[in-house]
Amino acid sequence: MYTTKDGEEIFIIDGHVHLWDASPANQRNVHGAEFINCFYGYHTALSPKEEVWPREKFEKYGAETMYEDLFVKGYDDMAIFQPTYLKEFYTNGFNTLEQNASLGTRYPERFIVNGAFDPRDGEAGLEQLEADCEKYKLKGVKLYTAEWKGDSKGYKLSDDHAKRYLERAEKLGVKNIHVHKGPTILPLNRDAFDVADIDDAATSFPNLNFIVEHCGLPRLDDFCWIAVQEPNVYGGLAVALPFIHSRPGYFAHIISELLFWLGEDRLLFGSDYGIWTPKWLVDQFMAFELPDDVRKETKVELTLGAKKKILGLNAARIYDIDIEAKKAALRSSQRVAAE
Image 1 (cartoon, rainbow, N blue to C red):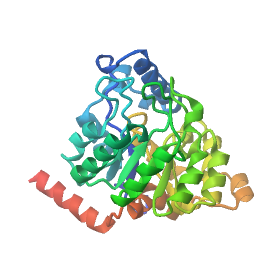
Image 2: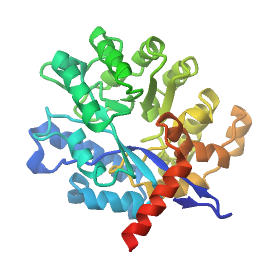
Image 3: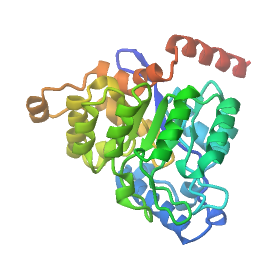
């Protein structure tokens, strides 16, 4: 838990983490290498030098390293697994529900395990979604609209078959729909991550929360103009947040626009682990202040109250987490472990 200089504790829910295996042994073809190469490029370009990992660790870091980075070295109190299968590129999948659950079930007080679905899987996929909900008590899913499947190189949430899945998710009580709508990753197609289909989906399913991961970057304006009209659309700050180090002026532009259009109640912190680790992100975010010219132009403030909402309170609200009860449970589990 992060503690301010005044001794105030901030409960942190990391809304975007993965436990992946991109090792050469799991790479199905050249595209598996291309994908993790692109991730590593983001990692090395946007991380502080002292936070850059060796390539071998980045490809497969393992469960124990992840737990330590998030909860021992890092300030996370909880984290939300967001699976990405990519079985066209990786023999056993890149970051599957089952891989994530192997760690999540060991530390249920720490992790929320989200599922995934792909509308191109038809009836079998709907049956799998129901089975996953029954087994893992899912409250959310992660969708990767640019994922390749056979001859298809993506889908849209406005497609009829996608709407069938969203209908089923709502019926099953899966209300948090995390959708990757951000920078492309080689070899995936940039246009398949376009944010435009969020507009139709959010209007059609007002009882679902659409958490747009990466805030639509590089289509920030498109995302903001959609989100201001759709009260059930949220912005996930994974990928946007690391610019706080390498491009603080650019980050000031991003966060001020999001605060202007969406407000502080609809933004969620995410480290995107293992591309980045939460400790340095939280440290720099807590120290960050909007430049005077940005504040004057946008009339927004990044207050301590706003930071607390972004770092944990907003995620707690949409995932029905009682923070005080969770704090007590975590302290109890730590006492038991120490005895």
